[in-house]
Image 1: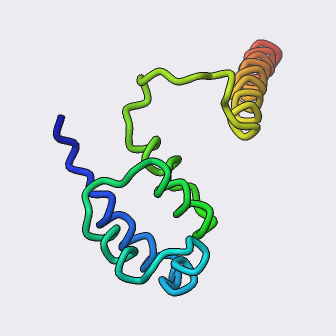
Image 2: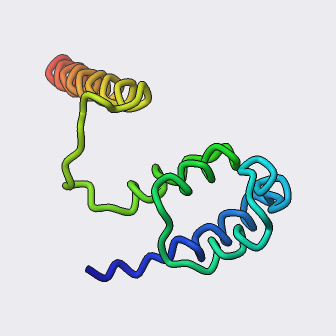
Length: 112
């Protein structure tokens, strides 16, 4: 399946955008400069390497990749983050408030 996603290019753009230093990343990962530059040239990387990159850069690469997938793709909802739970609660509260607002508008129209 061709995805058109090149992890190495993404990594290069991320480093530039976040203004990260390759020297610090390589030190955190315990890899040579040449190995790191090799990562940037590869379209894919092993899961473990990406995980190490996340820790070294203090950035969640996996979430960025997950956000590129269609929203209808299934996932383990039990493992959703606290943010996901808060968003769901706020969406539910928003629905309730909209309903109450509509009800108040209706009452004002009937009264006035």
